[in-house]
Image (cartoon, rainbow, N blue to C red; front, side, top):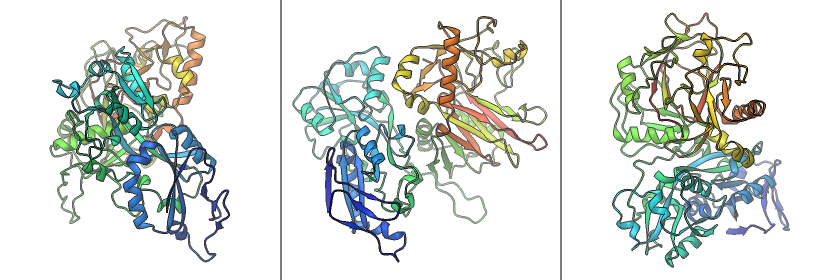
Length: 585
């Protein structure tokens, strides 16, 4: 039995902490037999799923079908609503699981797990002039046509609006709706061109419509599967709808009329977001490269990228950095970095030339201006080595003390895009590195604060110059008029736009000396302190405990990183290469 419940219907089921499955406003209540094990609830009972229309209509059907075959005695209720409505259903106990792209991660009492990444697509009548254009689809070309898309707060609508606004474009939105099927109905009538989630593209049914991938215009998005924190996670583990939404089946089925596409778009599904009985908890790219045997008699590992159970980070296994990478590996790694911001390569043993070659797949080496000192350079700038030894040993930099959360080269005209750090010697305790997700920090700010800071400009003063001109009061966290400004300095946006994903980034370090341009110093200092408190929350963090042979590659444009202190009597040696970036905007 599969029933569908709409918002406003009050009958619902839940799994109680005592194991009882209750149907509210009904006459039936049942509990598992006293002698039954926890597995009983994994095989029988009711699973209530709250989902948006797009997820219920396009993502869930194959998963529900597979689920019913595996658990024929579990009845399913599917509730539909907006992201905020289904988040509320989950909080109120009206659903065991909620699935949406927006809103779920905004509630501290919910545990939101990323389960699918997706881009937007443009849908138009098959005869539309957009399909006859030469070159890639651009925002300018798209804005020339009447547009039909989602209501505000639905399926990445905010990302659509932000993309046009960044280009100072004001497209005509002639119709907005919650339902992708409704949107496509009006597209078929010739009222406009639609921007919808790519999973809503169905050429088996939409025979008169064509599709253009728009991931390069609006970035990719993460669908979340959420449960209540502190709930009976173990009891619903086997009853989770396959959170990858039968993604492989959908992609094989969807032979779309597509003019442009994102090469090798690899979505990453967390281990914790799919049934534990399944082994496909990581995604390998097509034609995966199999790492060569290391001679220990063990079978070789397949190249895999597995998200870490944290706000950011993914672990890469089965990649041999002593060998050249394959094209599909590089593309998969770049996409994973875009989505997860930090990549951890395990069990590597490479020399400097091989480290430099690995880094070169992702960009050229960062080289600051000669008059701007950075880590490893001369005191006043210049002579910055390509490989910096981060170590408490002779010839190394940064010692053994704790380091506050910061972005590398934030004070330079063109900060680095990322860095690779290779662990050669590590202490038995301490020296851990924590990364913070600055995109998530921006996303979770209230809309009033977002409006308050969206257009502010920030100066981050060079800490290496401050060491040369120390103050009696120590390192200031905010420059006030009585402190002479350090020169040279650069002005960058407080909220930058990621050059590849288009996401907004709260671009601020924990303890760097900063100044917001053109505001009262007292207001600026208070605002910076408030933002720093927000972005350093543990919900945005991943802490890495180093092992010998780890290589960590992180996106310096979307993260901060900090280090814990360690015993100076122990040896710690890591080698870092930083990659050139672009001027923040």
